[in-house]
Length: 235
Length: 204
Ligand SMILES: [Fe+2]
Image (tube, rainbow over the protein chains, first blue to last red):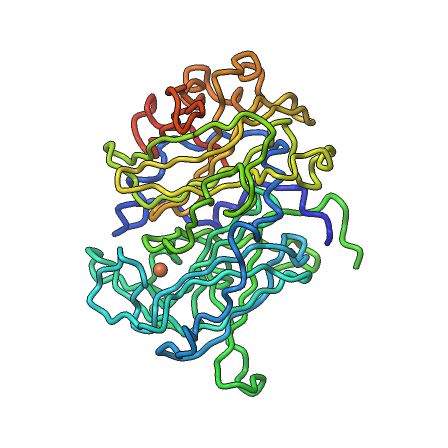
């Protein structure tokens, strides 16, 4: 395994979400008023857990089948690479994902929306990236859902991702969107990022159907975690 | 336009939203002293409980927040290539844990009192880094917990030192008796409030 990134600059604010977000009260209640303090980067920020597999148990990569029974919805595969800022695949990243079912409802007691649950769909997955930083899940395409008390803001179909990488500073929690969905252009979370190219990079790309032999649609989605290397890549 | 060999731009953060899966949490996730649910706890260092309450603007409980802790072992070492003494780090200590807040915003970790260390930035006092995720938090909020046992080291810590002096006590956990036969420390977080009440956070 290559050495983890050891240089971490600040994020470019134009490529990151800004708060508060209209119709999302928690973005007001839960984000500090005071600007964050700039601190030196020390060893506890450069390091991070490398052995999470013993605690978080990767291996749930097929969400589309539960106890041998298929979930409702369009079968899809979502995969890609986790890259650092130098474009190197980040091996040994723990990838967590969760999503709504085909009707746009989460298997979560807090989702009290009047849409059907699917007895064959939970919608949580975990895996560890391989030596090239690759990850992948079989699942179903999530449905859109309306945000309560929001003047009819609908979340477009999306998948939540949480990446635990080799350094604390390469932690990433994000959401992946689907290409061509008309709701994308109106989504307040996607629009909270000012930079249009940064928004576009959060939308996955569809794999041409001719390239897939099985009966599923494929989407590729690379995600970039923070971190560069003092030493340049060998290739 | 992106130039060849230009660095890639990190992907945009988004909130975990209200539906982070409860089934992602297991019993030992908030226990840093064990590598796994069925692993024996480490024998190096003093086991302590770190607990507290996460509040939002107006003082209401921040329910369903996720807190992630990362810290050195009892000797101040990390099992990570960025630590020159990684080979001496405690092999039975995870150093990472995840807790979640209940309906009152309460969380708890079981861990080891960390050791301090020296690096290029100076001498770090024993500390635990906390990252907080919640619905509405669009980017992880990060802060650091210090311990009152190490007043002199805290006074020289290069991270605590970036805060105005009046705010530094906010990042020092408060001893609060015993829990499970361990010393317990309380660390409450107010995510948004008046300047003298809000928890200091660091730029991530
Ligand atoms: Fe969602």
